[in-house]
Image 1: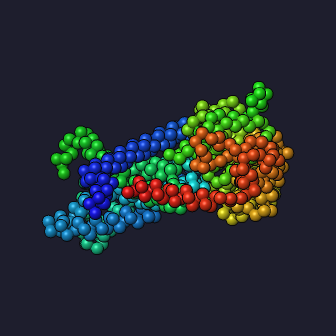
Image 2 (image 1 turned 30 degrees about the vertical axis):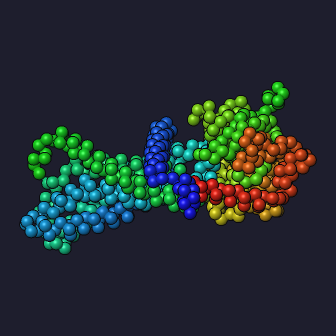
Image 3 (image 1 turned 180 degrees about the horizontal axis):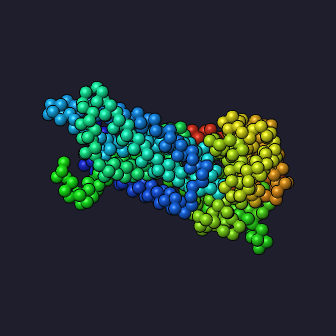
Length: 292
Length: 282
């Protein structure tokens, strides 16, 4: 019995050894993960560089541009407009009680419109674009990768980045300001409609306050940010599609990850651009803050 | 290789090695393909036939070695030179790889629209001619690839590969998934193409009927996973009529389609892998 126990002991490593092995495994795993992250960043960096180079060296073909713009811009308009309208109305519903307590309900327009134009309009338009267009781009390009259509393009002397990515990039970049403006406009209309017709706020004062507090810089702020969101959505979605794993599961994963990564990047960019633009505003109009 | 061979050779594969992650697919492969030859590359699934084909046209970057086409390496070319060199090839993909957002006519016209300045009428006429050459009527031109049968898709793929009259045609498993009659139609189209234009063809296949019917030369590759370290990956290189007279039993086994002891070997390999896996997990 004691012999058996000693044999067993000699084969089973002690607790410190096992702990050391587990720690080594974790460190190896962490190292591999860090390397993968660096490689992925490098990959998307190169992909973006190649897209930019094609963008400036040769204009995309008309037959690729028109469908991309239609798909990205025109077909996204209804859903963006609808989202904008409802968010405008929801903002009115949510803010009314507090403002009413202070007797400031006529100032509601300023708050709704400011939030919409600076923040919610661009972020919502970008989120809808990432969900509607980003995942569809990733799924479409992913299927093309899996069924060798991207290889077929290359084999026929067409560059897949020039043919497939550049039109989609341009579509997102150029159409997203329009979609943002649409979301802003419909949000403002929705907010005003609910405030005036359902909450009974005086229309004249509502409009006057709205105009007084929301300026051109706020509009520029939102539209400027949206350009970065559009570029990020296009690059991330096309990259996910191009590097799609084989099979239906791979295509599904590409579509999901395109949306998730785009959304995370939109939020990060929103914060960074928000900070930069606030800094710019403060340096251009130092007295502006005191007015509010 | 004599000086004449070297002058006449169109494609030279020199010490080619391709590795994906940790998996090696091709190792130290040397092959010279002269102009006008129809070469069949045969071998079981996973032996790297398609990878070799894609490496020849520069779709896969070799890990080691190089491939020269007409004396130039694809990966030494600038982005501007690359399309010009690529359109000297026509590639028929395994599943035809037609663009499913386009019609048949747009698919076949794609290379013409990319690389020529012909007007729409001329392009349409060329498309109809090319489709007729592969036995497809004019009424298919406005159909989408999803509306076609497997054999028709392959033929549209062939018409698209031939539309710019390339010097080299690469066929990736042209008869896989087709019925025997359609397979023979494709074989005859490969032969007809060769009679009509002086092309060099590389046919990747595991169909011995195709190999015997169309090839002047056969190269058999063997999967690296089943090969001893350092053993050559090319098991046979010669005319199709000599393929069964060789001494290597693995070649004969493939040609006759005999499983032999393969099922037992596969079970043993799986059992070994499982044991190794348990060892790693434990």
